[in-house]
Length: 217
Image (tube, rainbow, N blue to C red; front, side, top):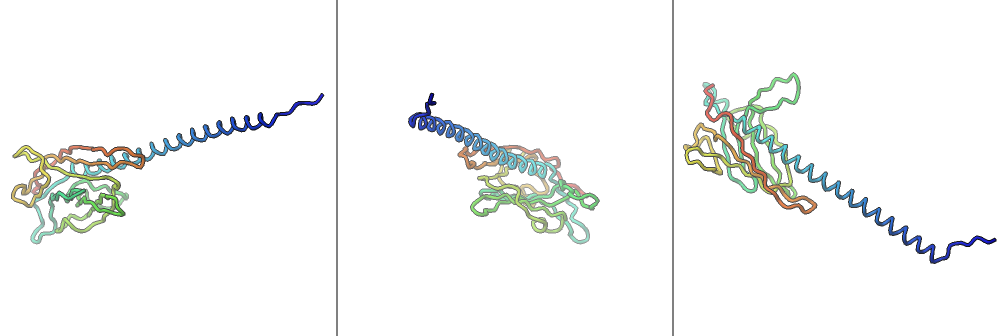
């Protein structure tokens, strides 16, 4: 007895069903991979934002001033000076927050820090300058490196106790704030939307400074 084979219609039908199943599986895996890529991109971006904010908070929390500038010549000078620039506020100060990266190296905890913004290849980049030597020129020297990119804005505001309001500038060399640090600083960042169409969002945090009056030594 002869065995009956598949007809052409049956073969085409089977091929069509197989193609539909393969396509469905492909798109399912494609969506899964795309979703994982989105989660990874968002997670890494937010990790970078929050680690940067924590670094700024730590620097500010340990900011300090000293009225001792060296004798007989002025060999070191500390300031807390801000400029309300756009899209990144410009801030220079001294802090006791230097992190020693190498064992056995003699380094002081005191350091000069400066935060400012640059536009590189169409992206906002937050730059951090650190000078291990607190010298007579607190606005120069040290090493500069980028700490965050791809955000919209970063703004510093300072609490003025006398008027009980936030102000966008502070200068310890001016008559209003001579030798006095703000008791707290508000940091506001507008995070840029990601590649997957997320909306911009605002992150706000307030730092209480440990030392508002200058050292005498």
